[in-house]
Length: 141
View 1 (cartoon, rainbow, N blue to C red):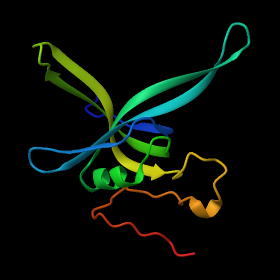
View 2: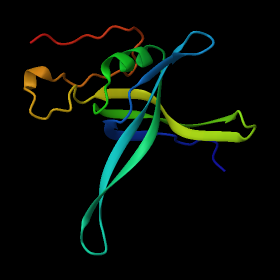
View 3: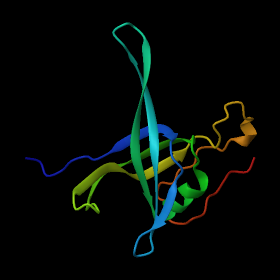
């Protein structure tokens, strides 16, 4: 049996909840939000139906700070990461778990949900991959 594997998730969707920034006990920033992805299916009666899937998204450290500052409900994002399952014991004593995506790469596709916004009001895609500082460089026009 091979001793290797791939754990990679690629999603393209819209931010569905306001990003929430918090800090670990060690002081590391963590940002989480829910991402909605949509797909269309054809029903038995040939009607087109939109189906929305919700994903739990987590970003760490400087990526968390940047995401918290830049993302808003409705923002279009492309992300790559790995699936991560976390378990804990609830206040009622029952064991709980959730599966989400820990993000490695996040590209902001737009800064507005208003499709009629002028191109000058939109920001070019930004990659957070391999980002070590909280500095963003935007190209001058």
